Structure formats: C-alpha cells, structure tokens
Image (tube, rainbow, N blue to C red; front, side, top):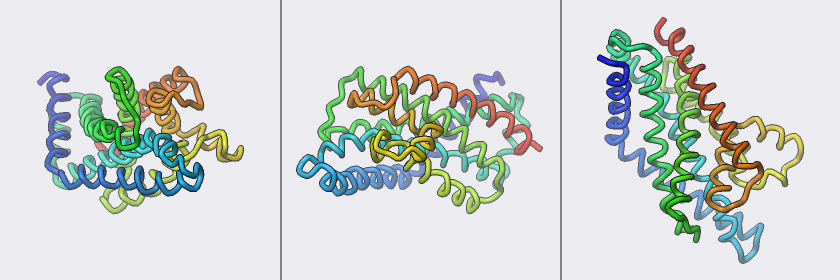
Length: 251
C-alpha cells in the first residue's frame, strides 16, 4: 500500500463516518442559524436600533468560524473511538507511516468541517449578504486553512485522553473561550486592552477576520497577516499532532 493510498483510505473512512451521522449535520446547522438569527437580531437591535441586519451581517463570518471550530476539534474524537473499538491497532500495523495516518485523519476532519462551513456560507442570503463565485472560493480557501489547524488541535487533545467524557469536557472548556475571543461577536477595536491581547494570540481570530475581509470587506488586520498566521498555525499544529500521535497513541 502506498502512502497516498493509505491517506485516501483513512480520509474516506472519516468522511463516510460523518455522512452516517446526519443528526450531527442538522444540529450544527440548526444551532448556527439560532445564533445568527436570534442572537444576531437581539444584539443587533440593541446596538444598532433599526439596523439590526448590519450586525447579523457582521456576525455571519463569525458563525462560520464557530462551525469550523466545533466540527474540526470534535473530529479528534475519532482517535478515542478507534482506540476503544480496536480499529486504531489495525491502522497502526498497516504498512504506512504515522505521518500518513495523521494526514488522513486531518484531511478527513478538515473535509467535514469545510463542508459544514460551506453550507452556512451558502445561507448568506438569510442576512442579506450577497456572494460572488470568486468570493465564495476565497472564503472556502480560508476555511480550509482554518480547518486543517483546528483538526490537528483536536487530534492532539484526543491523544492525551482515554474517554469520550474527558474529551467532551476539554472541548467545551476550549471552544467557548476561543469563540468569544475571536472577534466573532464584536469588533476587536472596541475591546479593552487586556482582551485585545488575548484575541491576538487566538488563531481563530485571524480566520474570522479573513472571512470577514473576504465576505464583507471589513478587517482588523490585513488579509496577508490573516493568511500568514493561518498557514503557520496549520503547519505548527500538524507537526505537533504527528509527534504527539507517535508518542502518546502509538506507545
């Protein structure tokens, strides 16, 4: 078996597993729409008066970021599931490298996350945001970079844990701070200095800002800065995930 074949098989397995979990797909879309419509309308009317739709449009890229964050990190649970049911042992004795295993899982989880993010992206008309085909392609490219780094983060977390309960607890403790400190809900420039510093070290910040720049033309950083941070984050987390997988999962 070649390395590419191994990556493809693992990727395909992750995607097929996702397609069987339709409840997860619909629940993610439903929760995203709740945030976008109810939260967006409520806060928007409080901040902007009659122009609540402006806040919903501002919120829209942040909701896409939330979908990518939740779906990507949640994909790490496949490590725990495979370990518990013995399938991980089967993968480990296959004639492929550990790096290929990590890449297969990363690409599989990333595909799932980008697919769900794209579904939300295509619902932009709900908040009166019009997307050109080029804007959609640029947005999907940014989502791919975000998903790769976040999936690897989920794999790292799962490598240190033995139970689904522990993973869900850590995921809950991680997701909400990252989401709230990403500029998804409010402009970064209105935050106090100590909160700004926390948003600057949050990789999700640059993903949300990149999406907002592409979709709305509103930015806190230049698109070049956003892309540079996302690329560096993706490669860094891929390296950490590979090393962690070898030391924690294999041994």
